[in-house]
Image 1: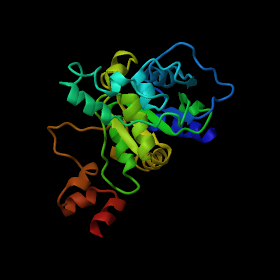
Image 2 (image 1 turned 180 degrees about the horizontal axis):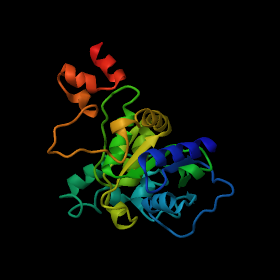
Image 3 (image 1 turned 45 degrees about the vertical axis):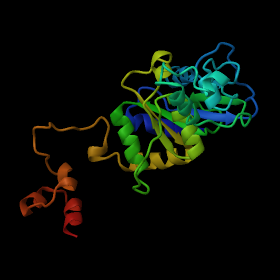
Length: 267
């Protein structure tokens, strides 16, 4: 799985990530040689164990303690009192109607399609991933989004209800859409899994992840580095970094630019 180790190394290096990108792989049969934990955790806890502790984990219906996460990931049908909205009405949303709508709109993988999920740091993925999760601060996620538009320049749209932020928003949406999605997180992610209040999550299908990595490497120069080489908000933006936003440049300003930029502006 050398390609995934190489991708992980480049991703961590360019974005200065605190942990590893997390590989999520769906399987019908158990992966031989990988232990199935007996203790129960939420899916977001498993993702943190892979990201921070570098654990390779094989999970199933019996060891995902969060029924909302397990059912979103297709390990079994949602419990009736979850699907009806009873658990959320008056607690997470105003009433039963709002709770019913909330649950109807949660993206889910059809139960029975898969029975096991491998969660691991990307560099140690024992099988090819279906989705890659990256946790970072807003500016790091901005760089990922910026890189994801490198290929075609198309605007990005994101789907969330702030419920089931890692399992549904981070994994299921990218998997079903074969694209990417940003998650603001959820209660479980913050309370049980120890994600920082500053963290966001982006989930990418394998196809979109590879496109993003191409863009990340291509845009890593000059003002597109991370950490961001910011300027103070009380100073006029200076050349050469500011040339892309300026309406018109004087001859004197043009002379200060690198030759390759002058050629672009004079063409």
